[in-house]
Length: 241
Image 1 (spheres, rainbow, N blue to C red):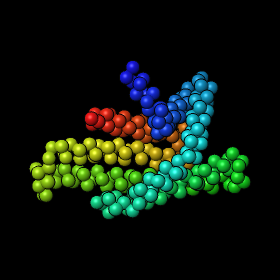
Image 2 (cartoon, rainbow, N blue to C red):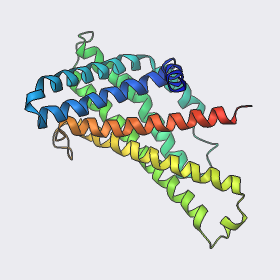
Image 3 (cartoon, rainbow, N blue to C red):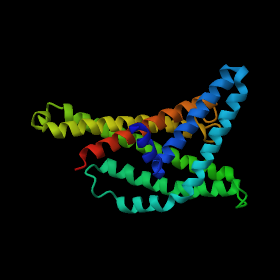
Image 4 (cartoon, one colour):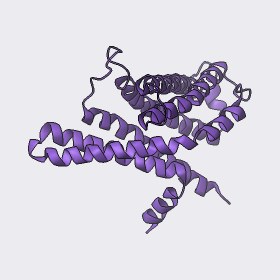
């Protein structure tokens, strides 16, 4: 019952519901793509799963129509990242926020064009929104990689004699942060692979992924996100008075 209660609680929040929809959508695409490619006798089931995946993706696109304000408030709150000690982290974070902020209106225009609300070329806006998403992911990869290297250096460098003076609680916190950054790095890399795939043909491996591989990359990213959210929720409950 604890699992069911936790799942119900997660589904009451927008982020929790979005993670579940995303995970289910990519899992359907993974299984559907495998069935279409490996099991011709079950191609009808595979086609239906791909249709479900497309509908779940469309559902998330519609829900993102209301994300602009939250993103704006986050970008405004972060500002130029004056609280960040590391200049590189501050720079890539600011650029990532800008890319994310412009991503939403571009996607909204693409959606409106597909829905015949606006008479504009949807393909152009889908390409631009995907490019902005890919840029944000690339900046996130750079940030996480930099943080992992910095944390590892601080934890293992004997030259600075830092480790010997580091309190045990502080060391455990840094190790947990490093693991979190590694998971974020892997998640962003999986999403980045799909983002490139959805760019116009001729850009690296754009358009070359079969459906099952897109589903696999998305499933990996989604499960890592769910795992991190579950760990964060667990730590929050454990630390609460």
